[in-house]
Image 1 (cartoon, rainbow over the protein chains, first blue to last red):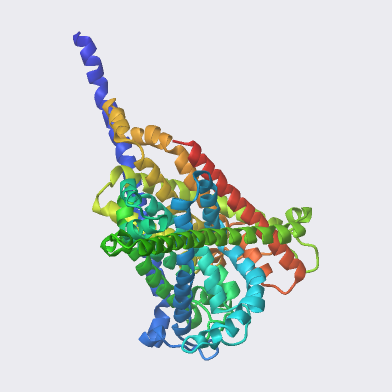
Image 2: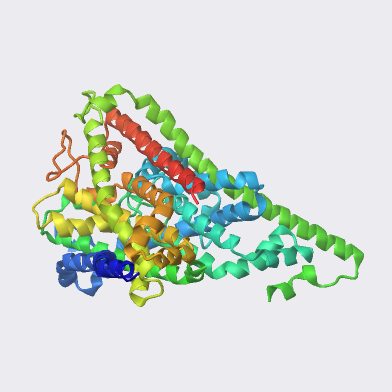
Length: 322
Length: 295
């Protein structure tokens, strides 16, 4: 009896010590990995800022809105590309949100159960297609269609209207701000649609059933019950799409036309921060002021997308908790 | 709120008016249903158009020499062998480096830092990295590895891709681990197992199909990444397995070929685009079916 009790007692401290060591090591590795993620984000901010510092020093605050970009005289400004980034992203949101809402409405309320999974997967696959494929497809397929059919039709119809007509005038090149926004809209559509679908599905069935019991139609249930219940998360999903649209590079680079000027018409060429960085990087020497200006642009893009993505997460917090 | 203002819910005495209202509500409903169906159709048409374009133009350009020849000057029957190998090499290494880090971070969030302030910050930052523009990751690695070490290199490309895959693995690992019931953890601890054994032998094992799904989705994502490689591994037109020098990759080759004025290069770009899209979509479908079969 006493022997049996003493045996495990003698061996216990050793196993306990070993498992303590194992626990300490494992917990340490996990904490270190968590810290590494913070370091990565901090590193991105610091490196981009330091890289852009010479440009910020040389041009001061006006760098943010100056529309000059002249590699010969080494005068750089972020105005045109910031404008292009914001305009294409906002236009893309305007185009994508109604379609994404329609898709989410269809997938949660209208589609028969056997259709939901394949259609949902197909829409999600749109999100998986690499950015460069969108670029090639946009350049070789969409741009010619825009030039031959869509833009002439828009010029003849909306282009004639007062007040907003000037947005839809000018030569129909096919590429340009509007085409870039269209491609972006297709790219962010699955992200917004998937978020909307997920939050729509979280509406308690009792709420919807009571509305149906009162005699509401499907659309009235969506408009009067589902949307009011989920509007904050829906806004979060839209912000997530906006954050994605701001930083898209390859697809936009192919179709935006790449010109450093602000045009009043949506058919005109332009550029975005990401497209300027991708295109001009190859032509800038290490340590040059131009490279620094590109890194400064990167820093501005980082701040823009960080703010938008942080908003998105804050709006989606109720969904994340659930 | 909006319910009280809804005319559908106010009692109507007049029969003709009630019928009119009913017709109007039905019409609004039918219109909304129709538009929603149309929106879904639009989404599917885009996907179909992308796939059709890739198949038509890609299969036309696809032949054996795409896989057996390296990239050559226009007009000399080159292939994509070096680009494909370069991509496989960089993606594989990035996955090998990024997956354990991502799993540890996900484990940290699910097992050690539930509700702690530090954990919340890490989760927030990881989610920001998940959606952050990949071009900025490229610029970051350029500043961190390319400038100080004197040149573009395959290793820099690997670093950029592993930074991109980490948050994807973090998200799925944490999500999968949070699905495991606490009673299972308590049972394991109650048997006297140390916490790390509980996590590695029980929690990871239960979550393994979910974690693999995350890794597959991550591979699918980094396989198509172009922008970060522009500033890190740069691309190379020769056969190269030397990770300390510039390294070719499929997306970069597609990018430079698609923008070129040479017809045979553009065709090769389409062949490459088809290959990469097929790989990415298959990985996605595989990942989804794995998740569906799992717990």
